[in-house]
Image 1 (tube, rainbow, N blue to C red):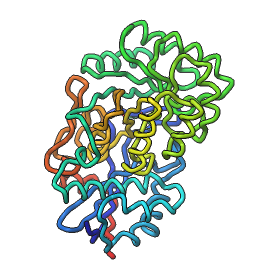
Image 2: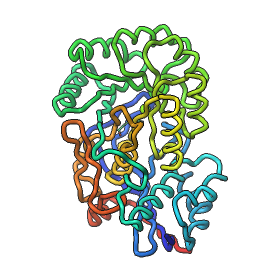
Image 3: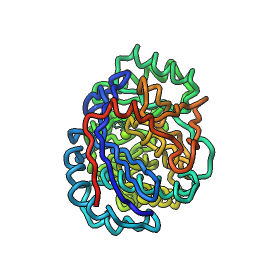
Image 4: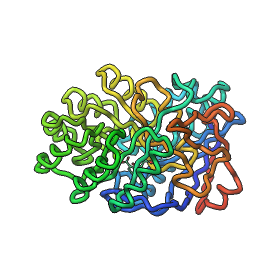
Length: 368
Ligand code: OSB
Ligand code: MG
């Protein structure tokens, strides 16, 4: 496939409900959307970086400068026999994994379209639909109980509660008491520290499937120090940005579960490497989310069709997040199963272009 042109838009979608996690509150999903064009094909990639570095270090301004100055000049006008050939261009640069993922995912989409097969088939997926749960933002206990009830009634396969210091044990006791048998997890988004080990140990009584990212975003070693004292599995999210990080976490038993976000780790190549490594260690993975629009959501669903995605992911129905999405197809789970989009090859979704234009705040075009 030849890449003749690129387009980057900044897209602004209001969230139906503000999403609160330990690091802050999101009221709108603002993200860069990359389109690559060539050979009569289009490939899409959605960026998961925030405007400010509150999940990981990467920012939208930094990512866009990196793409404009480092990556686009190296790929425009060039041909690639497969997405793997991109690694020689992307790998030498430090960090910027979310920006690299945008390009890498767009090339995978184009490549699958060139082969006239769904992305899941190009990746080696093995299922028609993927199991999903919900990620519930921080809210008071009555609101949380209502949200859990709605998720359970909707058939979601797992409920993940966002927690932070001071908003944890009482919340968990209330939810577990009202829903004694649901598959329940928590995500601290890095809010705890080593001295919080006794508190984390008391979470063992709630029968959680895992505790996601309790300690610092850039730390694996301290997670390994606490995992050995917990019955509950630790799941790493922020700390795993590459297959090397995953290897270090697996050999030091810092986690018994890993959350793979294709945007966080730099694309499908690294995501598959982490998936395979975890399978070799008999460690299950699941597909995380970043409140993506239909483009990023479709990428996540295709990824989650790989065999070791054996726990429910966060890619729930788009209608939980947005009044209207930028794709023409509704990505909706039924009974906790999200069908893999297959409206044509590649990503299997198509853009609602007039609506996309109406929610685009900036647009830039690039040519060789
Ligand atoms: O830690 O998984 C996380 C959203 C923004 C930043 C971090 C996280 C999340 C989610 C949302 O949990 C998952 C989703 O519903 O897309
Ligand atoms: Mg997380």
